[in-house]
Image: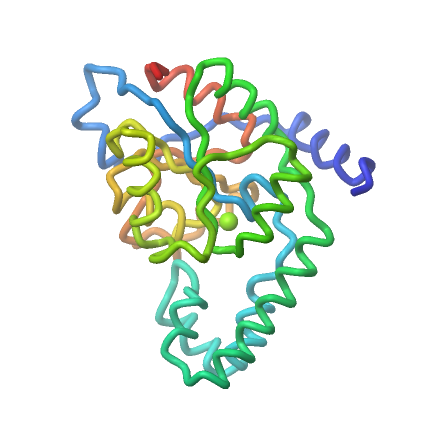
Length: 251
Ligand SMILES: [Mg+2]
């Protein structure tokens, strides 16, 4: 990966500092008003969270579903399309073609893979405080392997699409909590998807942090979604101060 591509993006974050925000109606806040909650582990989404988003999901959905079905499903799912879920009900031949299209988009994404600015600093911070790091992605295991290779920092457990059920089901997060022997409310799920990462985290009973780099989730269409994040940040760099100020980091 050319290092030059990495630098301007990092500089962009330095020149536009924004502090993290709490979502006004925090579902957990009522129980933690007087006590700083303990946090022992952080689970990350991969694409668009630990890596810079390069997959054009809308283009992928359109190609898999066709323009008409794409428009119809989009109208019914304001928080986003669950493409894997839709494909599961199709016949085998149609399914195979759909997975080929998805694999193609994912392959192109891997070729351009870049680590998200702030990711290694955040991991270093978590390590220094002995906070566990896990990963849950709807991408395939080979993509996680390549990410680990490029990043040089391991996440464990790292659950990919092969682990069923996948996000937004809370299953993978609950699996990690039990592997770590932690309660879900001692863990935070961080991701850039409201419909997958935040929903998975909230359903499991964990803290959730939405990475919203562009502020797109501030749009009115997302106001009525069922699962709202406890915190929203516009960069991973903000997560360090969020964890330091809002949580008791006690492994
Ligand atoms: Mg993502």
